[in-house]
Image (cartoon, rainbow, N blue to C red; front, side):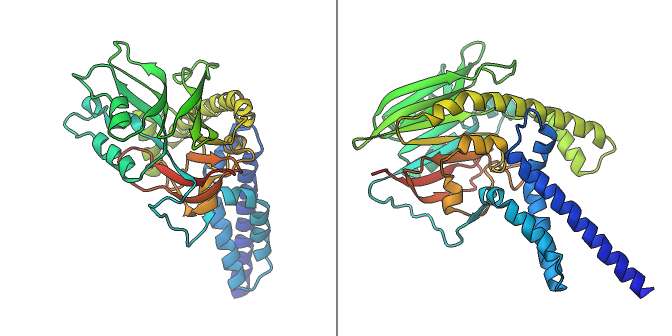
Length: 379
């Protein structure tokens, strides 16, 4: 009887290990498969970190029993090293020094969620965090600031104007703002913007357009910036979000609680993923040729709404560096809710830059966390 139990237990763990390893490899495939076509495999990419942890657990488990089965998960993790390296930072002793080095610039990427100004309508009585967000920017001595979901008032009786304050009080004399959405009565407008303490000498804007979507007016922009006689090109964009509303968040909550309507809830969430994958794929096809053909050393910033082992991420990254991978440690997140592994905001500098340091403070100001990196300028 004892022999049968041991045999059954060993076979159970072997089969479980094979299944986990196979799913992990499928999740690795998301980096190479167009999500518009292979959306069902791309969904696995969102859970990539979970499968990675399980494979690592199996390696430890088999090593404890001195079993050769430890090689299975070890080998599949070697195969998926490129994706692991994108998700996990391997710099345990990295620290962020507030003092900047010579010949360097400090870049911040931040989706500011309209500077938290919409509380006036969505959460009456709740104080805006706008001033604290401005204080955070000022305290970090930023040189170039890329912002998505930027909010600008057209009626100072309702909302304060943000561009003049950032220009004058935060000392960013140069900016380029692309208005993507305007309220029907012109009370306010939102879009993407690049602020700079160095002169902006040229700009460009391209709307994504394409498929019918609530986000089809959004755009990507770039600004050529003269940093002490050296011209660099800074891009920023806000790619298609999932457009989750109250209904979808309730569905996620119900799934966590194992509600009876799990099948219907899953269908609704998957539909949102499919729509977003298709639209982001279209957006990549628009921005990538412009990004890859920059005549100057470029820095790609933005909220991609994609995890770092995804096809979209690798297309946007191309031959560029990921500031997180270069100088961070552990598994990071830049979205403050849903999952602790959702890093969807990026700074991707050209390899001519040297990444000096990186941080993403978990400040509860926007629904996204800010991303900051110091870059040494190209020779």
